[in-house]
Amino acid sequence: MDRQAGEDRSAAEGDIRVLRAAREGVLERLGAACTRAGRDPRDVRLVAVSKTVPAERLRLATTAGFDLFGENRVQEAAAKASLLPGPRWHLVGHLQHNKARTALELFDLIETVDSVELARRLDRLLAEGAVGRAVPYPVLLQVNVDADPAKAGFDPDELAAALPELAALPNLRLEGLMTVGRLVTGAEEARPTFVALRRLSERLRASGEAGRSLGGALSMGMSDDFEVACEEGATLVRVGRALFGERASAAR
Ligand SMILES: *Cc1c(COP(=O)(O)O)cnc(C)c1O
Image (tube, rainbow, N blue to C red; front, side):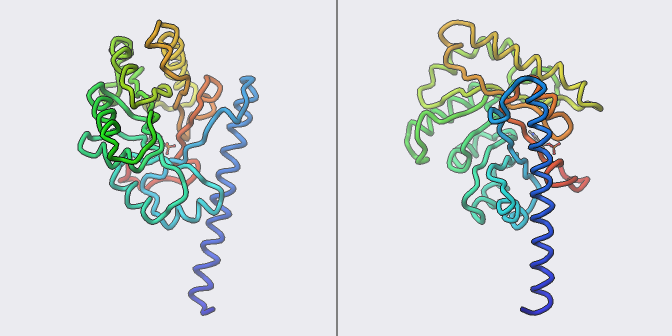
C-alpha cells in the first residue's frame, strides 16, 4: 500500500472511531433520560440527521453502527441513497408536492406531512401503485405546536378538524406526530413544546373514530434537547450535530 492510501485509510478508521463514540455517547444519554422517566430506551429510535454530511462520511457512519438517517431535502437524500444502499432514511424536512413520488420511493417514513393536500397526494400516488411501496405507508403529521410563523406544520386545532379526512385515506398509516421546537437557548425551555405535543397526541387519540387511527409515535428533540424529549415521551429523536459535529455555518 502506498503512503497516501495508508494515510487515507487511517483517517477513515479514526473517523469511524469518532462516529462510533459519538453514537454511543448519545445512546447512553438517551438511555439515562429514559431511565429517569421510567421508560424503556428501546422505545426510542435514534434518527441520525445527516443533512450536509457527504455520502463518503455516511458510509463510515454505517460501519460505525448507524442504520437510520434523516434528511431534510429529497434531492440530497436521493444522491446519497444511490451511493449508499443499506441504511434506512426518514424525511425530516418540508416536502414539496412535486417531489412526493421520489420521497415515497426513497424514504421509509415521511415525518413531515404538514397539510391535507400533501396527504391526499401521497395517498393518490400510493393508490396508483407506481412507487412499489407496501400500503398503508407510514407517515407522521407535523404539528406547529408553538404557532411559530417560521415553522411548517398543522396548527393543533386545524389538525383536530382535519383528522377524520386524514384517517380516511386508505393508503396512509398515521403513525403519530412530529414537531420542530422553536429555537431556545437551553434544553429546559423546550420542555413545554414537547409536553404540548404529547398532550395533543393523547387528546386526538382519545377523540372518537378518527383518533383511533392515529398511532402514538412522537418525533421530537434534537441535539440540544433530545434528553428532555425522551423524558417527555419521544419515540423518535432527530439528532445531527451531537453525532456528526457542527455543520458549516452557512448550512441549515
Ligand atoms: C437539522 C434538523 C435536526 C437535527 O438538528 P441538530 O441540532 O443538528 O441535532 C432535527 N430535525 C430537523 C427537522 C432538522 O432539520
